[in-house]
Amino acid sequence: QVQLVESGGGLVQAGGSLRLSCAASRSIFSINAMGWHRQAPGKQRELVAAITDRGSTNYADSVKGRFTISRDIRKNTQYLQMNSLKPEDTAVYYCAAGLDGSSWDYWGQGTQVTVSS
Image (cartoon, rainbow, N blue to C red; front, top):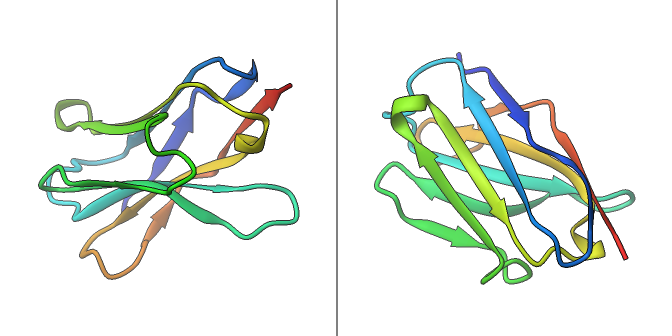
């Protein structure tokens, strides 16, 4: 079992920055993949960014060059640095962990990000 707790969401103006954190209840060293997803009102949940246990990353086209995913194994925490935020980035952001890379097995409760124009 892995419990994930997000923090760092909030209200920011367009062009601003936020950093989301996701603290895991146990070591993330052996977790195959961790990621951030988001869900805006009336839309499906989408993968924003992911990072593997080897440090490989991938991003949704809509956030490339603006968002950076990272993790600190010593702190059992992953991060999402979000820069140049746009109103369309407004959503609930969820942290997720995939133990073997075939699916997302554990989810956090979500944190709201609101970008005002």
